[in-house]
Length: 282
Image (cartoon, rainbow, N blue to C red; front, side, top):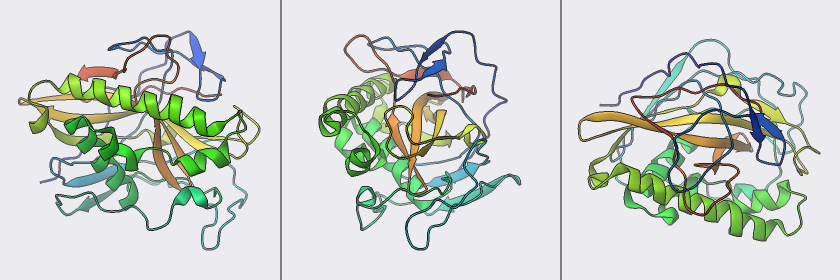
């Protein structure tokens, strides 16, 4: 039976700052680290996902301060959407042993839209199922459906050689962080059950074009939490940053944004569901 939970009230972000995904500054919050240091902080509210093998439940409260209200969507049938601010919705997906396909078309081959994502969407639930299966098995390839599409990144960034930046930095860091998370689960990783994914969508914010070396805009939310149970104890760790493409959330940084040493990072591992402080980016 799916179990969903709501994140506790977010604590205030501590002083200090660190760079965001594209080089901007953001307040720094304290993290526990594995393997390498990090300098970033992120945000939270609640989205439940249960995927032990995999029942998926989603619980989310939405809100996007600063998100553009003008209709800037560029594809047919996908206009700008206003984030919900009226309570909590719950979606339950039937148990499955495989990760359902998220789409038949590469979303990165299509233009960006301004629709604010929801963590209750079937696609996001499928992504989190894939992410958890990748963490449990230690397989970045299994978790890849949850990661921001390369084709979208090529549209997004104005940096020199975005393809190499995607492969050599973003994807490599994702693999290292996923390996560290797998190690965190310990020898009973195969029995670890995902209880919830808490996404603080009320802290979601729009990153406009021209900021952080971006050609187009996107929504970002930090400090989501993967809540799981292993050896009879509920534990959790963070997803450093989710960003949007065409109205869906994707992982872009799992364990850290900026890193000064080699190795993977587990974002803020805690006993219990943990918390998700508000933070800014860029």
